[in-house]
Image 1 (cartoon, rainbow, N blue to C red):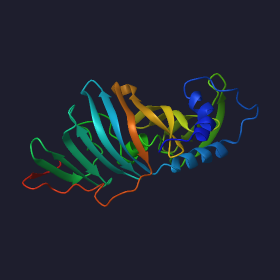
Image 2 (image 1 turned 180 degrees about the vertical axis):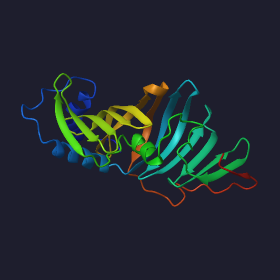
Image 3 (image 1 turned 60 degrees about the vertical axis):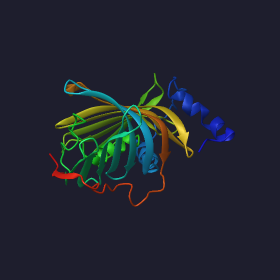
Image 4 (image 1 turned 45 degrees about the vertical axis):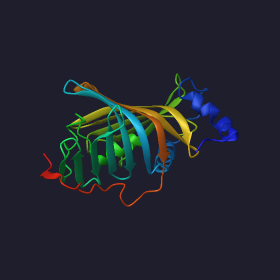
Length: 258
Protein backbone atom coordinates (compact mmCIF):
# COMPACT_ATOMS: atom_id res chain seq x y z
CA UNK A 1 0.00 0.00 0.00
CA UNK A 2 1.52 3.28 -1.11
CA UNK A 3 1.08 6.31 1.18
CA UNK A 4 -1.19 9.07 -0.03
CA UNK A 5 0.16 12.59 -0.62
CA UNK A 6 -1.08 13.85 2.73
CA UNK A 7 0.53 11.00 4.67
CA UNK A 8 3.82 11.41 2.81
CA UNK A 9 3.79 15.15 3.57
CA UNK A 10 2.95 14.52 7.23
CA UNK A 11 5.76 11.98 7.65
CA UNK A 12 8.36 13.83 5.60
CA UNK A 13 10.12 15.48 8.59
CA UNK A 14 10.37 12.12 10.36
CA UNK A 15 11.63 10.35 7.25
CA UNK A 16 14.23 13.04 6.68
CA UNK A 17 15.33 12.88 10.29
CA UNK A 18 16.61 9.34 9.82
CA UNK A 19 19.56 10.75 7.87
CA UNK A 20 19.85 14.30 9.18
CA UNK A 21 20.20 16.15 12.45
CA UNK A 22 16.87 16.57 14.21
CA UNK A 23 15.60 19.87 15.61
CA UNK A 24 16.75 20.71 19.15
CA UNK A 25 15.24 18.55 21.85
CA UNK A 26 12.73 20.04 24.28
CA UNK A 27 14.41 21.74 27.23
CA UNK A 28 12.63 19.49 29.72
CA UNK A 29 13.51 15.80 29.66
CA UNK A 30 10.32 13.70 29.88
CA UNK A 31 9.98 10.89 32.43
CA UNK A 32 11.99 7.85 31.37
CA UNK A 33 9.07 5.52 32.02
CA UNK A 34 6.88 7.57 29.69
CA UNK A 35 9.35 7.27 26.80
CA UNK A 36 9.82 3.57 27.56
CA UNK A 37 6.06 2.97 27.30
CA UNK A 38 5.93 4.87 24.00
CA UNK A 39 8.76 2.71 22.63
CA UNK A 40 6.95 -0.45 23.75
CA UNK A 41 3.68 0.70 22.17
CA UNK A 42 5.36 1.54 18.89
CA UNK A 43 7.15 -1.81 18.86
CA UNK A 44 3.94 -3.70 19.72
CA UNK A 45 2.20 -2.20 16.67
CA UNK A 46 4.23 -4.49 14.36
CA UNK A 47 3.20 -8.10 14.92
CA UNK A 48 4.79 -9.66 11.86
CA UNK A 49 5.90 -9.30 8.26
CA UNK A 50 6.21 -11.01 4.92
CA UNK A 51 8.98 -9.72 2.72
CA UNK A 52 11.80 -10.16 0.27
CA UNK A 53 15.20 -9.22 1.71
CA UNK A 54 18.84 -9.20 0.74
CA UNK A 55 20.59 -10.74 3.73
CA UNK A 56 24.34 -10.48 4.24
CA UNK A 57 26.40 -12.23 6.90
CA UNK A 58 30.09 -11.52 7.42
CA UNK A 59 32.27 -13.23 10.05
CA UNK A 60 35.63 -15.01 10.27
CA UNK A 61 33.80 -18.37 10.07
CA UNK A 62 31.45 -17.66 7.15
CA UNK A 63 30.34 -14.93 4.80
CA UNK A 64 27.48 -14.96 2.32
CA UNK A 65 24.88 -12.78 0.65
CA UNK A 66 21.51 -14.26 -0.33
CA UNK A 67 18.10 -13.10 -1.38
CA UNK A 68 15.59 -14.46 1.10
CA UNK A 69 11.84 -14.71 1.34
CA UNK A 70 11.15 -13.99 5.01
CA UNK A 71 8.05 -14.52 7.11
CA UNK A 72 8.37 -13.40 10.74
CA UNK A 73 5.65 -13.34 13.36
CA UNK A 74 5.75 -12.82 17.10
CA UNK A 75 6.77 -14.35 19.34
CA UNK A 76 9.14 -16.76 17.57
CA UNK A 77 7.64 -17.87 14.25
CA UNK A 78 10.06 -17.70 11.34
CA UNK A 79 10.08 -18.91 7.74
CA UNK A 80 13.11 -18.49 5.49
CA UNK A 81 13.33 -19.43 1.82
CA UNK A 82 16.81 -18.89 0.35
CA UNK A 83 16.79 -18.13 -3.36
CA UNK A 84 19.43 -18.62 -6.03
CA UNK A 85 20.42 -15.70 -8.33
CA UNK A 86 17.80 -17.09 -10.76
CA UNK A 87 15.11 -17.11 -8.06
CA UNK A 88 14.90 -20.88 -7.56
CA UNK A 89 14.63 -22.10 -3.93
CA UNK A 90 17.87 -23.39 -2.42
CA UNK A 91 16.66 -24.01 1.14
CA UNK A 92 13.47 -23.88 3.21
CA UNK A 93 13.54 -23.33 6.99
CA UNK A 94 10.58 -23.04 9.35
CA UNK A 95 10.41 -22.75 13.13
CA UNK A 96 7.71 -21.96 15.66
CA UNK A 97 10.33 -21.30 18.32
CA UNK A 98 10.07 -24.85 19.63
CA UNK A 99 10.58 -27.13 16.63
CA UNK A 100 12.75 -26.39 13.61
CA UNK A 101 12.49 -27.96 10.14
CA UNK A 102 14.77 -27.54 7.14
CA UNK A 103 14.48 -28.87 3.61
CA UNK A 104 17.35 -28.91 1.10
CA UNK A 105 15.81 -29.42 -2.38
CA UNK A 106 19.17 -30.03 -4.04
CA UNK A 107 19.84 -33.08 -1.83
CA UNK A 108 16.14 -33.87 -1.22
CA UNK A 109 16.91 -34.08 2.51
CA UNK A 110 14.55 -32.97 5.26
CA UNK A 111 15.82 -32.21 8.77
CA UNK A 112 13.64 -31.87 11.86
CA UNK A 113 14.34 -31.40 15.57
CA UNK A 114 13.83 -29.28 18.67
CA UNK A 115 15.06 -25.70 18.64
CA UNK A 116 18.43 -25.23 20.33
CA UNK A 117 20.44 -22.09 20.95
CA UNK A 118 22.80 -23.09 18.12
CA UNK A 119 20.11 -24.21 15.66
CA UNK A 120 20.97 -21.43 13.21
CA UNK A 121 24.74 -21.74 13.61
CA UNK A 122 25.05 -23.02 10.03
CA UNK A 123 23.96 -19.53 8.90
CA UNK A 124 24.29 -17.17 11.90
CA UNK A 125 27.47 -17.35 14.01
CA UNK A 126 25.64 -15.57 16.85
CA UNK A 127 23.38 -17.77 18.99
CA UNK A 128 20.05 -15.96 19.30
CA UNK A 129 16.67 -17.24 20.48
CA UNK A 130 14.01 -17.20 17.73
CA UNK A 131 12.15 -14.41 19.52
CA UNK A 132 15.14 -12.09 19.11
CA UNK A 133 15.65 -13.02 15.45
CA UNK A 134 12.00 -12.11 14.85
CA UNK A 135 12.32 -8.84 16.78
CA UNK A 136 15.41 -7.89 14.77
CA UNK A 137 13.52 -8.43 11.51
CA UNK A 138 10.59 -6.38 12.85
CA UNK A 139 12.86 -3.46 13.77
CA UNK A 140 12.69 -3.98 17.53
CA UNK A 141 14.66 -5.10 20.55
CA UNK A 142 13.87 -7.50 23.43
CA UNK A 143 12.38 -5.14 26.02
CA UNK A 144 12.53 -7.41 29.04
CA UNK A 145 11.68 -6.28 32.57
CA UNK A 146 14.33 -3.93 33.86
CA UNK A 147 15.15 -2.90 37.41
CA UNK A 148 16.33 0.60 36.49
CA UNK A 149 15.25 2.91 33.65
CA UNK A 150 16.76 6.33 32.94
CA UNK A 151 16.65 8.85 30.11
CA UNK A 152 19.19 11.37 28.89
CA UNK A 153 19.36 13.68 25.87
CA UNK A 154 21.73 13.30 22.94
CA UNK A 155 21.68 16.93 21.85
CA UNK A 156 24.08 16.55 18.92
CA UNK A 157 21.83 14.04 17.14
CA UNK A 158 18.56 15.23 18.64
CA UNK A 159 17.65 11.85 20.15
CA UNK A 160 16.66 10.47 23.53
CA UNK A 161 18.98 7.85 25.00
CA UNK A 162 17.06 5.33 27.06
CA UNK A 163 19.17 3.26 29.49
CA UNK A 164 17.68 0.00 30.78
CA UNK A 165 19.54 -1.90 33.50
CA UNK A 166 19.08 -5.19 35.34
CA UNK A 167 21.95 -5.64 37.84
CA UNK A 168 20.48 -8.93 39.06
CA UNK A 169 20.77 -10.47 35.58
CA UNK A 170 23.88 -8.47 34.71
CA UNK A 171 22.10 -7.09 31.66
CA UNK A 172 22.07 -3.63 30.13
CA UNK A 173 20.39 -2.03 27.12
CA UNK A 174 20.93 1.41 25.63
CA UNK A 175 18.42 2.66 23.07
CA UNK A 176 18.72 5.73 20.83
CA UNK A 177 15.12 6.83 20.34
CA UNK A 178 13.50 9.27 17.91
CA UNK A 179 11.84 11.98 20.08
CA UNK A 180 8.70 12.28 17.93
CA UNK A 181 8.00 8.82 16.52
CA UNK A 182 9.74 6.79 19.28
CA UNK A 183 11.44 4.55 16.75
CA UNK A 184 14.62 2.83 17.86
CA UNK A 185 17.41 4.01 15.58
CA UNK A 186 20.25 2.26 17.40
CA UNK A 187 20.57 -0.12 20.33
CA UNK A 188 23.27 -1.81 22.39
CA UNK A 189 22.50 -4.99 24.33
CA UNK A 190 24.95 -6.41 26.84
CA UNK A 191 24.47 -9.58 28.84
CA UNK A 192 26.55 -12.59 29.82
CA UNK A 193 27.51 -14.59 26.76
CA UNK A 194 25.75 -12.36 24.21
CA UNK A 195 26.35 -8.70 23.39
CA UNK A 196 25.51 -6.95 20.16
CA UNK A 197 24.57 -3.64 18.55
CA UNK A 198 21.63 -2.84 16.24
CA UNK A 199 21.21 -0.07 13.68
CA UNK A 200 17.89 0.65 11.95
CA UNK A 201 17.62 3.04 8.99
CA UNK A 202 15.77 3.90 5.76
CA UNK A 203 12.43 4.37 7.51
CA UNK A 204 9.53 4.41 5.06
CA UNK A 205 5.77 4.08 5.61
CA UNK A 206 4.17 0.66 5.12
CA UNK A 207 0.44 0.55 5.91
CA UNK A 208 0.94 3.98 7.51
CA UNK A 209 3.58 2.53 9.85
CA UNK A 210 7.16 3.77 9.57
CA UNK A 211 9.35 0.73 9.09
CA UNK A 212 13.15 0.45 8.76
CA UNK A 213 13.91 -1.09 5.37
CA UNK A 214 17.56 -1.50 6.35
CA UNK A 215 18.74 -3.17 9.56
CA UNK A 216 22.17 -4.18 10.78
CA UNK A 217 23.46 -6.26 13.68
CA UNK A 218 27.05 -6.12 14.95
CA UNK A 219 28.73 -8.42 17.46
CA UNK A 220 32.19 -6.89 17.82
CA UNK A 221 33.66 -9.65 19.99
CA UNK A 222 32.90 -12.14 17.22
CA UNK A 223 33.68 -9.76 14.32
CA UNK A 224 30.17 -10.45 13.08
CA UNK A 225 28.02 -8.26 10.83
CA UNK A 226 24.49 -9.16 9.72
CA UNK A 227 22.38 -6.93 7.51
CA UNK A 228 18.93 -7.20 5.96
CA UNK A 229 17.59 -4.85 3.32
CA UNK A 230 13.93 -5.09 2.29
CA UNK A 231 13.01 -4.05 -1.26
CA UNK A 232 9.54 -5.53 -0.63
CA UNK A 233 7.73 -5.91 2.68
CA UNK A 234 4.20 -6.30 4.07
CA UNK A 235 3.49 -5.52 7.72
CA UNK A 236 0.89 -7.29 9.83
CA UNK A 237 -0.22 -9.44 6.88
CA UNK A 238 -2.95 -12.04 6.74
CA UNK A 239 -1.53 -15.40 7.78
CA UNK A 240 -2.31 -18.74 6.17
CA UNK A 241 -2.38 -22.12 7.89
CA UNK A 242 0.67 -23.26 5.93
CA UNK A 243 2.81 -20.14 6.38
CA UNK A 244 4.82 -21.72 9.20
CA UNK A 245 4.37 -25.32 8.18
CA UNK A 246 6.90 -27.36 6.21
CA UNK A 247 5.52 -30.77 5.23
CA UNK A 248 7.97 -33.50 4.26
CA UNK A 249 8.23 -33.53 0.44
CA UNK A 250 7.49 -36.81 -1.30
CA UNK A 251 10.57 -39.01 -1.49
CA UNK A 252 12.69 -36.83 0.80
CA UNK A 253 15.09 -38.45 3.23
CA UNK A 254 14.06 -37.47 6.78
CA UNK A 255 16.97 -36.89 9.19
CA UNK A 256 17.29 -35.60 12.77
CA UNK A 257 18.47 -32.04 13.18
CA UNK A 258 22.29 -32.13 13.18
